[in-house]
Image (tube, rainbow, N blue to C red):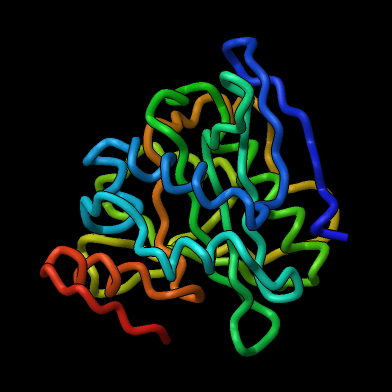
Length: 219
C-alpha cells in the first residue's frame, strides 16, 4: 500500500534521509520546517512569505486520506527527534484520473538531489494509484524547479499567466522515464515550489495571510 512506503536515500553529499508518508504526529516537525524556510523559498512554494501554516491547514496536511492524496516527507533524526528536510504531495482531482502536486525542500538541502528523490517517490505513489496525469504550477523565476521538471519529462502547458507556468506529465507504467540519474543530479534543488490546487488552494491562503485576515475559509 502507498501508506506503507519507506525508503532510505543516500544523497549527493553522502548524507542519508528517510522518505516516508507523513503521519499525524509530524505536525510540529512540519510547522518547524515551514518556519525555517527562507523568504524566497516560502514565496516560491506558497506565493507569499507566510511565517507558518494556520492550525487547520497544518492538521489537514498531516492527516490525509491515502486513497485521494499522498504526502511524502524526507526526515532525519537530530537530537533524538525527527526533522523534516523536504515534502512532496499530490491530491487526486474529482475526475479520479489526474492530480495536482507540490514539493519543497529545505534551503540547506540545496544541490543534494533531495528534490529529485522526492519527486520520483511521489510519481511512483501516483502510479500505484493509477493516476493518468500529474500537474502543477511553477513560478517562472524558479529555475531549480524548472530544471527538475525538464529532467522528469514534464511538458509546459501554455497559459496567459506570465508569473507561473503549468507543468504536466502523462503517467505510463515502468520507470519514471529519466534518461539518466545525472539529469536529476544536475537539477539544483535550492528551492522547489509548485502550487497544489487540489488541497486547500495555497495561493488564496497565502493572499489571505498576507492581507492580515485572521479567518481562513476552507474549500
